[in-house]
Image (tube, rainbow, N blue to C red; front, side, top):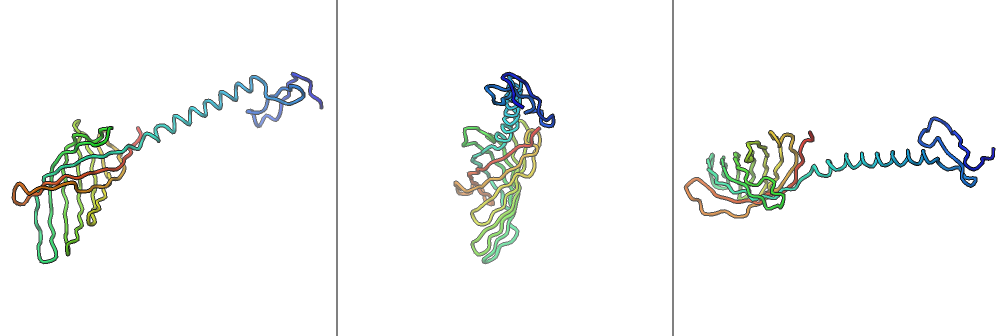
Length: 196
């Protein structure tokens, strides 16, 4: 059947998106209404994609902080070639990053350390308290100089926090009192928060 210019034709209803066409110059073309509907749908789909993508893209944040502690050391066992001890420390964090995340957090850390033939390993838990009273907890596992920190719990604005970081020693001074140690560390990584 030959179509005349401007004539409307209905195609199969199963695909409503492309069902209405008109002819222009002998070619089957979408009607103006269908073109407008198509543009609206494509626009809405694009907007939906942006709305979904932006929170995901912004969910991961970088942190880069300096943590300074004063440790109280609790020796458990010491002999030639092996030392085991517990420790507890308190301190404060300052942010190096422009986002200032975790800046001015106060810190509490408890854990244990073992040194065998000059090689150390340690395991500890770290509590980070923000100025508003919300907090998160990290687990630290050290093999030699490599320390991996993992977020394991959070309260308030930090509820559902997930992520990981690395710590390295910056400096340590002469102990101010017997049985203590004073150290500063660089701690950097990334985290994501539970979407509300």
